[in-house]
Image (cartoon, rainbow, N blue to C red):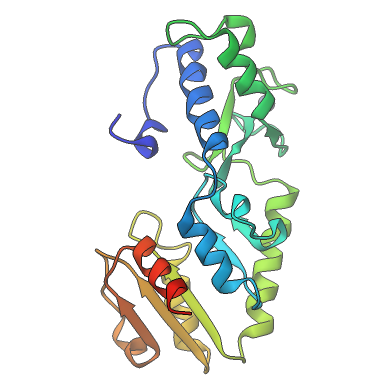
Length: 227
Ligand SMILES: [Zn+2]
């Protein structure tokens, strides 16, 4: 493992070790307060109509004060677990489960009796991350997808800013490419792309886009300080 993202794909020797790891990882995220970047971003948008679409799974937007009904976590959330084979589309909050695991975890293993099993089919449970074909999208996920689409539809003729923060080419089809496409199509749209690495802009939208080659955190802080 080189970081918390790659750890999601690590091949553990047993379920007892895997959940011992996830319990620490998830609990760590529960304990981290909202960082200044997210709090500053919220200060910048809270008086305006806004909607967040994110591939982040760490819950930082909600902690920083963004409204739950306006944050679409497309790729899942580490606050939820699901059936590993997606036999039913229900998600389960994991806070109590991971805290219980941590209380009895020993030598990077949890007791076998605490390894979670799907309440419907008895198969393994999995964190709710889109990493295979079994990713569960529940009612709330579809509700937010609809809210996002409606938000875009209701502002497409108005002055709309697509503020794209740190989106690379891991999953560009979720935010990066659609933002470019909508900027091209909507008459009054502006794309602001903040990225310290991936800065190419499609030729068709160059006069409607602003590219800022900078770390997102630094950019947001500067913007907030200059208000
Ligand atoms: Zn199941």
